[in-house]
Image 1: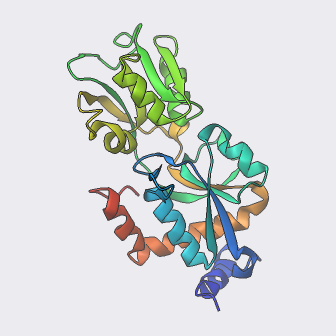
Image 2: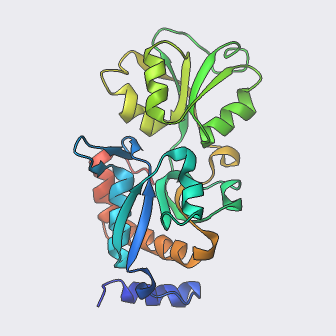
Amino acid sequence: MKKFIALALLAIMILGTSVSANDWDKIRIGVEGAYPPFSWVEKDGTLKGFDIDIAMALCEEIGAECVLVPQDWDGIIPALLARKYDAIIASMSITEERKKKVAFSDKYYNTPAKFAQKKGSGITISKAGLKGKTVGVQRATTHDNFITAEFGDSVEIKRYGTQDEAYLDAIAGRVDLLLADSIAMDDGFLKTDKGKGWEFVGPGYSDPKYFGVGAGIAVRKGDRELAKLFSLAIKVIRSNGVYHMINGKYFAFDVY
């Protein structure tokens, strides 16, 4: 019998749902694989990263086999709705706009967005300071929405399919600034040899209007019970030390 049976029964009592662990023997998880340190693909094709470890830990708590399905970010929600997989664990911020299409679990982490510039650029983060500058962002993200709404009349926005593509254009001098999740950009770019000539500039941004209340697990609206199970499993790994162990592999502080 699965170890998650007792937890599922607790979910029934607490959340009033009829779902049982037996409904989810296998959970297909959509992941991006191009967003270090949250997810990336090794040379041998193995998926690695914080999101990947969290996905595996949550599936273990639920007592389900976890099947990881790589998917480009641009099509990650459409593929969920088309039933290519059952859930998305890909650093997806819980926003009101996305909740029109999908349901979410509780958050499993929350980190601010920041700008980065080439060292010595002397750019001031304000509408006047950004006038005429080119900013690189990943397409269809909360960062894209934020820069468009708050600075769209001051800057030229270059949008990319992956964050790595934005980094490459930064190195090539095609953008003046980058805007991304602070942890992803620090670990995935600034701390690497390629990004050593770049630095953070300006404050962190976490306005729920644009960035939501953290990253959650997206499911189809008809699978809200699965979202509730994920939320309960998040609480369990936060309390039993598993989350802390995973967090410590990638970060020097608690990203929750």
